[in-house]
Length: 400
Figure (cartoon, rainbow, N blue to C red):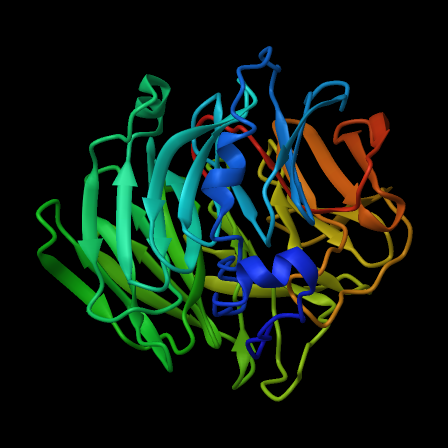
């Protein structure tokens, strides 16, 4: 998304609950301010579910068994909500209108743990820590996700940005914290803090900074409107895009590879650009390669496989498996029917979530969800749900 798209009009109950929330593109911040009250009514203990998936729909959350895709629980939660892995084997972070809420997905119930703040944005897992960035306040909260099992809000690290903005943060294994720089009007780069939140270094040559990913040997990158900014071993390195405007706003990394997968857009004036090229950024060689897939994709189309392979869900309905080193498209796995990315970033579209060797793909037009074995390309399970789903995630213990 080159330009922020402020969100579609809401009607009925959703409007009454969400009208006061200001949207920013990709921030995931509009949701019901009454989500906590709604969730409490659904917090009745339920049987545990193995390797759960969590999908959002207009009005709540679905919890599904990760093996057979059986729908095991529905939790009502009005408004637009977003979901991300918390970083342990049981929990998922839900972004609502009041802040970040913690869902015990294995136990199929919302907990009382909440990080309050307007416009909850990016959730980042890395090196056994999870970082939450609240766009409306610029506050960063970092905690050990295994502490969520106690049922109490974990003791953790906090940091307040100089100004609120749509940002992201990630804590490294050595305790350094990388966090973005910007204001509501302009984002410029990133800084790095030591364990005591004292600034170590910064780089402000990353216009429109957005998103993050980590590669092998802890090379951490954030996207820019003219390339990508990499931080590793105490130093920033800028890798320029081949175009004057070459925006990399969404990235996916893997501990199995030094190469990052990113999107790539070149039209700063587009209301919505539907790119056909992706970027592969070698963090060791500090080089960027573009690969044309021959089909467009959306910001919910990028993921990584167990060998570090780049995975992109195209609007042609196929899951494109790309060798991250050569850029060669190794295979195209049929997943869903053809589709087009909607203008409004909040509207549902096919979404990709990968865990271990399984790719989960939603097909909101058919109210369907599929599990695909990446090794064989075969669908191992499918389900039709009561409502079309939007976001898709699940429990994932370990790094981003």
